[in-house]
Every structure is written in C-alpha cells, then in structure tokens.
Length: 340
Image 1 (cartoon, rainbow, N blue to C red):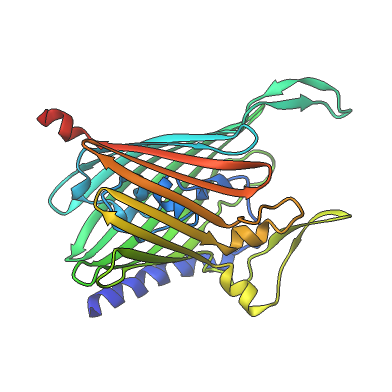
Image 2: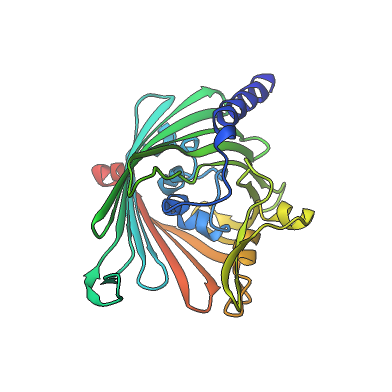
C-alpha cells in the first residue's frame, strides 16, 4: 500500500506542477475532446475513469484501464447528439506481453451542415465543420493491482477555410483491489497544445485532472462510482441566459462549487452479461439552468447486454428540450471468430 500511495502522489505532482501556471477559466474549441465514446461511462453521468470491465471503449477515459485481458478486443461507438451533430469512432487493442497492452483508435466529430455568410450576412453556401482524433494507448502493470497508462492523441480540425492541428497526452494510473472490489484512478487529460493555429494566436486544450472511485457494495450486485473532475481549479464557471443575452458566472457558494466537481453513478450488475446504470452530473444540470432545460437534466441512464460474441451498450440523456442524446457501443473479441 505504501508503494501505491507514493505512485499516486508522484503522478499528481507531475501533473500539477507544469500546468498550474497556465490555468485558465475559459474553455476552447477543443472541448469535444472531453466527450466520452463509452456508452457505459455516458450512462454513469457522462464520464467514469475507474470501473473495471473488459470494455475497450472505457480505455478512452483512462489509459490505465487498458490491459492484456483486452487482447484482440474491438469496439465501435456512435453518438447521436442534438441539431444534426454526430460522433463516431473505433478502438482496437492487443496484448504486447503478460503485463502490457497497446490500443489504437479513431474518433470523428461531425457537426452537420451550417450556412456560410459574408460580412453583410448574405448566404454564400454551406459548410460542414468536423474534427478527427487519432490516438494510440499503451498500458503496463506496475505491480499486482496497480497499472499505469499513457495515450498520445493527434487532432485535426476543419472549419470551412480554417484548419487546426493539436497534439495531446493523457496519463492515467489505476489501483484495483479484486478481493474488496474497489478501484481508484487518477488521470491527467489533454496535456498538450496546438501545432497549427486557427488564427493569430494559439488556443488552449481543455486539459483536466480527474480522480475516480468505484466500489461494489459487499454482498450486493450494486456498484457505486464517484468521479471528480476539474481538480486544478475550485470555481468552475458556467453559462447563463438572461434578458440581455448570455454570459459566464462564477459562484462563491461552497456547496455549489463542490458538487460541480462531482459525477455520481450507480449500477445494478445482474451478472457478467447484463447491467443497468444510472448517473447524475450536477455540473451538467447547473449549466442547463434555463427556461428550456428538462427536469431530468443532469441524469443519464443506460444498459449493457452481452450475447455470445458481441456486447451492446446503450445510453440516453435528455439534458435539454431541444433533443435527446443517444450513444451506442458494439464490442467484440476478434479471437472469438478465429476459434470459430
């Protein structure tokens, strides 16, 4: 346990020290990099970095969740968002040794068709903005129960005549106690910057530091999770809508700031092949404090079913009256086909 504590502290220091000087309150055009491709994680409030499953899509949230047990695992993901926005991608993993694993993936973010106008407002046509993310992940078992991982991400953005390139790294560590069925994770995400800027200045990536805890309650089929995000800052600004337009507000209330850092999730694990999950993200709910929000804003729900060689995960959330989001994952193990 002493070694585990030292490693967690060391990673936290390595993440915090170089980034503390560049902390900013705003967000960037690269916020889509925080969108999970995992329906399981989306059902648990939109993000989870600590549940232990042989699900290759969860690797995108924490590179330390990748392992040799995911040899030849392949997953595809699709998300139907609002206003014609769609996300899709794929990830494939292989074991490199008894203690190491490698995965590669691609994520595509399409935002539908938008009108293109000149400075007078005259419509000149349409364009389709898009973002593409290529990634490579490596993980290694440090000692029994303790695993570290890193992901390299190359990002390409195309918005009509403007293009941008960015390079980022995710660093993660996970400790899993199989006997007591709890998991702890620490992740630093999107550490990097732009290689090619859109305009005259370089933009910031939406880097983050997150901590996750998952626990199967003893003698029950229930697993609970708490994910803490934006740990590099205490006050998380949120958008508001007033009669005078939009704006950004920063709250001084302790509990408001405290709960905006937390995502809660609970699962009922019927067996290894079937689960139901429910999540609540207070930040999402508070960001949607407008007359047009849904009363279920902040909640998400999902389920997963494994039948023979395939596993299907589905998650749904309705944060706004403008539309309901739907995420679907389909995963399989290529070795099952080889054996057939």
